[in-house]
Image 1 (cartoon, rainbow, N blue to C red):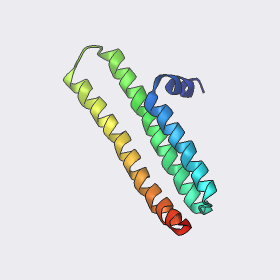
Image 2 (tube, rainbow, N blue to C red):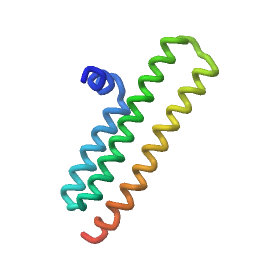
Image 3 (cartoon, rainbow, N blue to C red):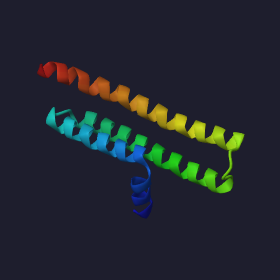
Image 4 (cartoon, rainbow, N blue to C red):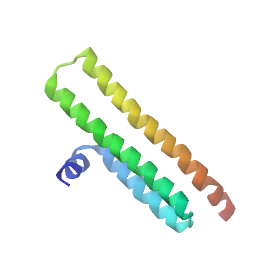
Length: 107
């Protein structure tokens, strides 16, 4: 729990992702997505948040190992940021597939 608290306090991206996750879950309940769809949404949220936590841990470790600018450390940080981007974009696509048809059905 201490690690989660640290990430939440220190990482603005994590705070934003948690806020978006809460909004997404509430929207899912409000428009009554199916249980399977809710499970998929929860898995996507978990993947994004976990990837962000791992990214943060590796960035902090890199900064501890090499506090000065280093080409290899920069590459590692870029790779980890890319993993968060992939998780986020794929989750956005999954969310669109689940939510967009249901929103249009309400209109």
